[in-house]
Amino acid sequence: MSFKLYLSKQADSDLHALAEHPSMDKRLKAVRKALGYLEVNVRHPSLHTHKFSGIKGINGAEVFEAYAENNTSNAFRIFWQYGIEKQALTVLGIVAHP
Image (tube, rainbow, N blue to C red; front, side, top):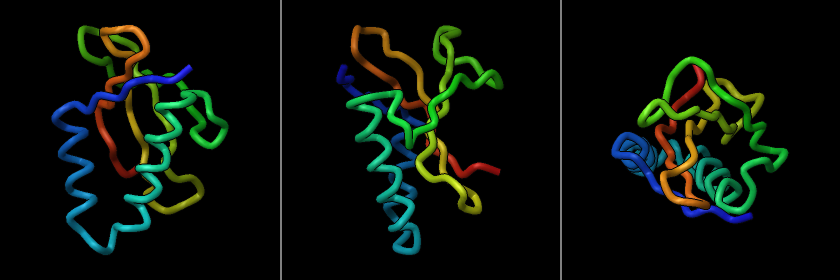
C-alpha cells in the first residue's frame, strides 16, 4: 500500500537544514531513501518502524518512529503519524537520535 507524504513545518525545516550543509549529504541521502520507503511500505524492514510513546501527534494521534540510519552515532530518525486522509502520512520531525 502506498502513502502520500505530508511534511509538517518542523519536518520541512529539518529537511532543509540537512540540505543546507554539504557535510550532511550522506545523512540527507539516507533520510530521503527512508522517506521513499515510507511512501511505499511503512513496515519496510530497514525502517524498523515502531510506535513512539514519548509524544502525541496532531490531535492526539499515535506517533511512530522510523530509522533513516542505524548503528551510526547520532543516527537520524523520522517521526510520523497517519494522516487525516486515507493513505496519507504526516512527517512530524526528522532528528538525530541522542
